[in-house]
Image (tube, rainbow, N blue to C red):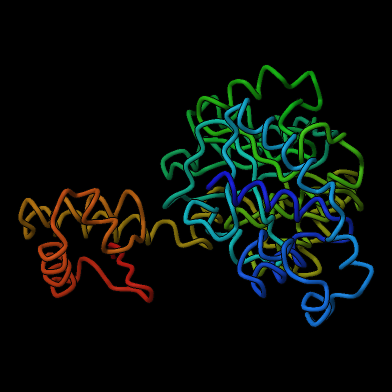
Length: 367
């Protein structure tokens, strides 16, 4: 993200009363965060839902000063900032109305063309819950999913550990800034995550891990993934909140059933009973309901077909699109080192062969 835009976006988010939903509305109306901050009072008050109190808060002069301090922290610590309108912003989060305007990232995170699942559960995980997580991740390994959780005690940290054990990318979504790790006992695991995955947060530095932050954090855990899996939960708990959020985003939710007498199966059994989650009895349930098997067989069949029918240039373009996902014509030409006039012809031939399809906005993707 361009530094000047980041500065003004930070400044806008620093305004009391402006969260992600309202910030997006203001940016859409004015064109950018900088335009919002520089807009005249009377113009801002014409925006539906923006009253005098909020306009006065926007016009306070200390927002840029605080934003500059946070920007300095971001630059010094090599933190990547993903803006909600950027191409590198997580695809699934783009469809969440309350997704973060800014996501702060550390590590080696790659979410392009990836199967992403969130695994959550009680902090008092039992031996049964641990065995389910280990078996689930072991059996899903061949599909190379990204495992998302919250680095907390119990189910969260065990999911991260099993993902690391099986060489899968794993991402921890934090309820505080990237200047600390909570709980401190998990710092060694956080450092391992940075090698294959990483840390995500929408909180500024020096933000304490307060209770309400974890609830807000859960919207990212639910929103960044194709599906949320609840391993174990009592009748009330943060995992059930995450499941409810995932349902509100129309995402798949799975819950592991347990004995009706077990305290930490009560929440999962209730999710299943009230049709808020599908019962998870094995990795096959995830693969079937998320259509992973079909996707894999289509890819293999396409790759076999392409190997026979495509020339060297066409294969180069398809390989690039398979790796990077949908891209603009100019970007494809640049990364494939081809002139625009030639890439247009190549893409047309690939479209006719059924290997590539055009999308709105001059985008193309491999089928």
